[in-house]
Image (cartoon, rainbow, N blue to C red; front, side, top):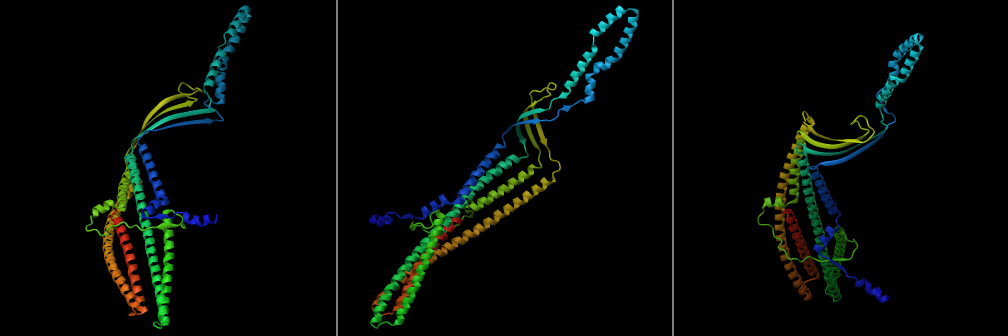
Length: 479
């Protein structure tokens, strides 16, 4: 069991990260890229919604209402009059008929009885009253339960170009969101490369600090031996020890900086900040040379920022058309099938009845001052977008020329640094030989070691600088 505990930590393989792996991990884990991808999908759906505006819309609606009271087209007095219309009309005739029967009964009782039976069997009063009640019932509208429904189809025919312009806006917005995604990927790659090469630089500087400390340790050993032999003085020992302390402090700073830089790189890659990963240097051989000629038109065509501003210019132009649509006529057609209960299609009936309807709506703006000012404001925004595009092109041209010049300078610095390193290495070799031969003092050897460390550090800085300058130039060229 004890053997297992000793072996297990060494059995785990340390994960190796190179530049391409760091880029891949950063793309997979970056939340800003995920947000940008969601924005792309959102604008695609909005573009689909804009396309749908060209097609008819079909909708169905239904309603139900309960009413406490019914609609009374006739008043209570009018209803009573109609219900008694026969009695009212026949009352004078009934009175005259009774008087006539009384007179006839005095002369001929038998004839009067026959006439009374005849009048009793023929009663127009009741018939008229029944007719009045029918009229009253017909005017009583039952509105307690009201149902209604409709299926409607509407189609815009001409909206002043608004629908077409809105579709173009959605299309341009989708293209802009795709470019934004590309721009965020590009910025992320730059950040990852910066963090990666910062780690590589600090790894080299840590190695240099360790080598320098080793050189100083060896020098202290020799100086101590020389002090015992009376060849060196305590002052010589002190100088070397001071330099060793300074070198150890530089080593500690390099290690601290390396730890922080590794955490920054791990954060970009979505890795555990305290994870044990080995960062290996990308040794791909590239010639990091400046451009001989610069085709600015091609650069503008490649730059994402310029493409976004060009899309912004097109968006502003389309917004002018959208605003202008408010001053143009609008034409739309619609058709419906409507059902109601109760319905009045064949008198008043408490049942469902329906019909088809079709219509055309035309709206002609006559005096819309707000739309006039909206068009003017949209044109001013279009001019702003054009000026912003022109200024951005000018700034890109300046940026490209500046970075190209900086890369040229960085190449010269690297050549000079490498030459200085060769001289410093040769000087250090000669100083070591001279010190061993007792020709020079420890201070002279210390100066040679310090010069070698400075030259080596300058080479590391120059190599990282030339890589980053080349990267910035490629970004500025849109490559």
